[in-house]
Amino acid sequence: MRLKELRQNLHCTQEKIANDLNIARTTYRNYENGDREPSLDFLIKIADYFDISLDYLLGRQNNNLLFIDSLSPAKKELISMIKGLNEDETFVAIGMIAKLANQSIDEVMNKIKKQHKTSQNMLQLKNKE
Image (cartoon, rainbow, N blue to C red):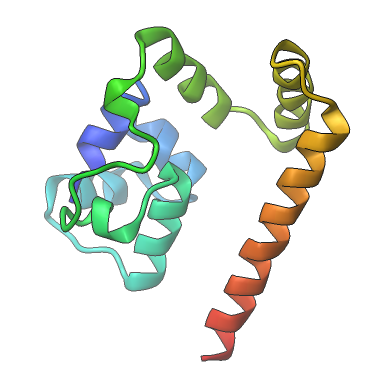
């Protein structure tokens, strides 16, 4: 698994990732070191957290959908900071970034809502299986 690589790319500590995933740091460390294997449900949670596919997380695919490795250090730091925001802070950041990108906040929020609805629908389908 690529947990250590992913965490280091975001410049995060094991403690921060463990807290974000609501598990003990020792549990996360065991996952990262390969001493313990997470359940399929938890693997999905990890992949969602890092915004990657399960295939990439498990080393079955070599291209990261976010292409983090090709980003500048400043953009990597921005991603790291965004990961640490709570929900309200995230919406403030979206507004600021939308303004910088010359996009209307409404347009950006509509895209997010559409993606969220699609994700929720996929989750509901998965839960029915």
